[in-house]
Image 1 (cartoon, one colour):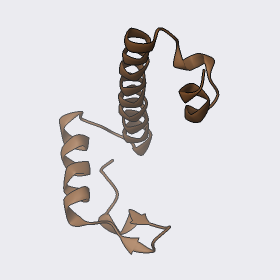
Image 2: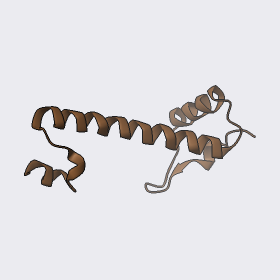
Image 3: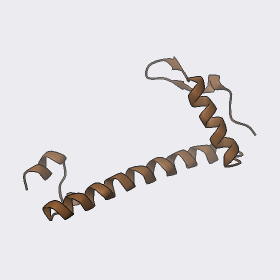
Length: 84
């Protein structure tokens, strides 16, 4: 199987076609990781997205703890974090 054609990718919120640069990147990722199905591509995307978000939040958490000595996980919202 191969990556679906560019017409299969679009921004449904803005009703716009996929930019060629984004599709080219998708083709590079597909080829680099030797993907066989869209399921492989989907899992790769989710894994990289979730890991990046987790890394950013962990750095934020460490920074807040280092400077203010409390854990952001104990606060439901950012405004509640600002007024402990």
